Length: 267
Ligand SMILES: NC(=O)c1ccc[n+]([C@@H]2O[C@H](COP(=O)([O-])OP(=O)(O)OC[C@H]3O[C@@H](n4cnc5c(N)ncnc54)[C@H](O)[C@@H]3O)[C@@H](O)[C@H]2O)c1
Image (cartoon, rainbow, N blue to C red; front, top):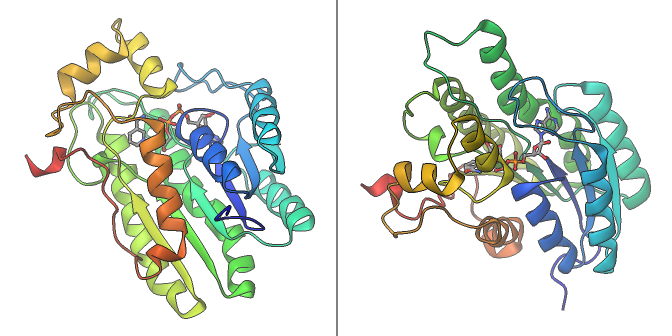
C-alpha cells in the first residue's frame, strides 16, 4: 500500500539534491507533489546554476512513477512566487499535508571577510525563506487541523563551523524557528521538526568543492569526522527520514531535531 496516497507534499529546492530525492520518494508512496525551485541561476553562490529544465526533468520522473506534480519556478525570498505556488497547489490537490522546507545555499568565507550582501543572501534564502514559505502554507494546515513541517537545517545548526559562520547562523535560526512553530501549531494538530544532516552527496557539495579547486570526495573526507566512517550520507538516507517524520509513526515527534549525523556530533 502506498503510504502517502492522496496526501500533498510541498517541497522547496525540489529540482536537485535532497529536494529531488525526497520528491521522488514521496511520489513512489503515491503523494501529490508541489515542487518549487529557482528557474534561473543565483549570483551568489556561483555554484548554483539552476534552470527551469531541472524542474521539467523532475516532473517527467515523478509522472513516470504514476504520481501527480505541479512545478513552480520561483524564489523562496519572494512572497508573490510562494503565494502563486501555494494557491495553484491547493486549487489542484485541495490540501498541503507536508511542507519540506529544503531550499538552501552554502558558501565559504571568514566571518570578518564576508560582505553584507553575502551575509544577507545566506540569511534571506536559508532562514527567511523557510519562514516565508511556512507563513503561506500554515494557514491551510490550520484550516485542515493537520500537517507536518520538516525544516532541513544542518549539523551547522548545532555547532560552529569554520568559514561557514553565516551558514551556521542561518541553520541555528531554523532550529529556533522549528521549535517556535511546534509550540504555536501543536493546538492545531500540526507538527514541526528539523532534520540536521551531516554532509550529503548532492550537487551543493560538488559546487562548493569546485570553488575550492578540489573534488567533493576530497573535501568530505578531509572535513567529515563522522563516527560511522563514511565521507557523507546519501539523499536516500534523508528521504527515508523525511518519510518517517511525515508519517503517523512520528505522531509525537515535534519541536525536536532528528539528527542525521552518522555520529559526528557525538565526537
Ligand atoms: N549537501 C549537504 O552536505 C547538506 C548538509 C546539511 C544540510 N544541507 C541542507 O540541505 C538543503 C538542500 O541542500 P542540497 O544539498 O540538496 O543542495 P543542492 O544545491 O544540491 O540543492 C538545493 C536546491 O535548492 C534550490 N534553491 C536554492 N536557493 C533557492 C531559492 N532562493 N529559492 C528556491 N530554491 C532555491 C536550488 O536551486 C537547488 O535546486 C539545504 O538547505 C542545505 O543547506 C545540505
